[in-house]
Length: 143
Image 1 (cartoon, one colour):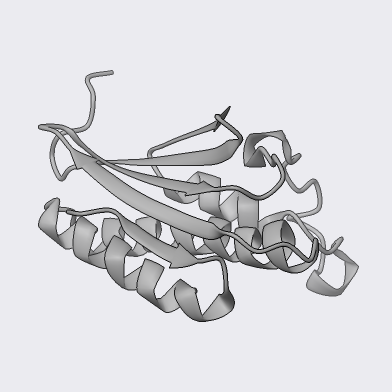
Image 2: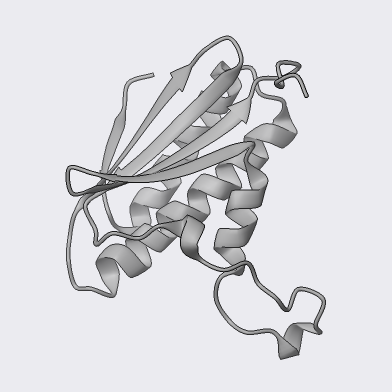
């Protein structure tokens, strides 16, 4: 698939989601895995739009691209917002607490990172690069 380049604005999230769903289907992912991938990318893209651009008063683009090999579909989401590594966000400690007692924040990133088979973050050439990997159906790595 050709890369998708969209403004870092809320109304771009639907286009990003549609792109990821199509990539998942073309990549041979089962429905459940397409959903998981979409959930993860949507969470990170939403955070880029709201926190990376919106709350800082900056504007920028989001680029989404895919690669496909025999075993894995990889989706890369890049932006030029301030550096932010989702892997450094601590896991929520209060998941067993009643909902009204939980701290706000961090759950979406936790769910995103748990939803995909692999996740990596890089900051390269002044760009955040979030790399999501999903094993193609029946092609998980050997234990």
